[in-house]
Length: 102
Image 1 (cartoon, helix red, strand yellow):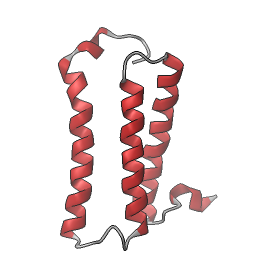
Image 2 (cartoon, one colour):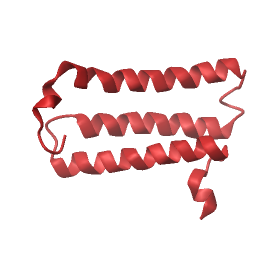
Image 3 (cartoon, one colour):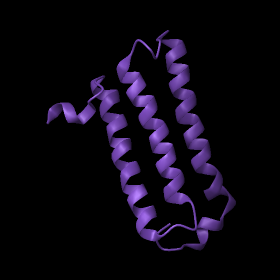
Image 4 (cartoon, one colour):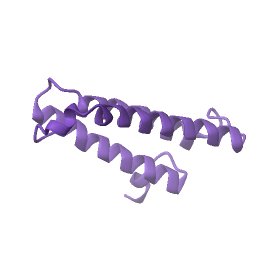
């Protein structure tokens, strides 16, 4: 991404992020079904799913060719921060996530 590697043209490299994103969304839906939870009743799940969609969007921007390296780097860092937020929400079950400790 940042070093203009020739591996970015590999078909697998283009497909794997979509598989990962689909797996994350599917696992969220399966978890809701198995635990018989409603997203509307669980605010932490709402926050986690919305953050997951933001993460997917940022990942799309970070990996999309044709944008400046600075823009893609910023999207990548933002995606990492959103990922950390998702993990913190999952661990704390609070919509504030790691911000609850501040």
